[in-house]
Length: 243
Image 1 (cartoon, rainbow, N blue to C red):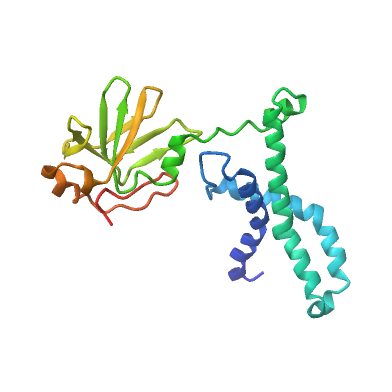
Image 2: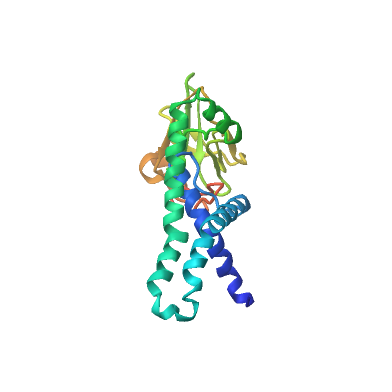
């Protein structure tokens, strides 16, 4: 195979498996499908299963017309659709349905055996939703505790947000002083950032648009944070005030 076609071949090899995983897990966890080595290997395994099960049938249907494919485009398109669309869709949806049945019957022996091999995914939380929607991007984040304490700062590079199944938390690269209302009023220059675990003693997490919510004395400072990048897996974001 020519070397310039190798990336295309790899993409074709993982596509059915990736689509199956996406359809089976989308919306069931607090994390997006992360394109890492584990996902690639899982996709390859699932694609190999599809090929092992459906490949002989596709081979039997196409081998006899291999010299006249231009006259049998419909057959070629049909089997391409089966391998790359129909099979992944059905497998993903059936997987979701089966897992839903497992969750409704947790004491069933089959459910127990299944959960030994495949532990239940951590249900997404409100924090997962907010973090994955990027609510922290370009904003100040203020964490309020049940005892009245507050801590906050500007979310920006190298800021990190942790979502399920990891313990919830956020790293703010720029810590700010807060007024009596919890509004950011002044950057703490000596601070190198603040790491905030989000545990049961957190009452709320507040997000502020810098230009609209900080006091007039600090409004000019709120517009100065350095340029930031949009978060990837670690959810690195832009500093407040950056367009």
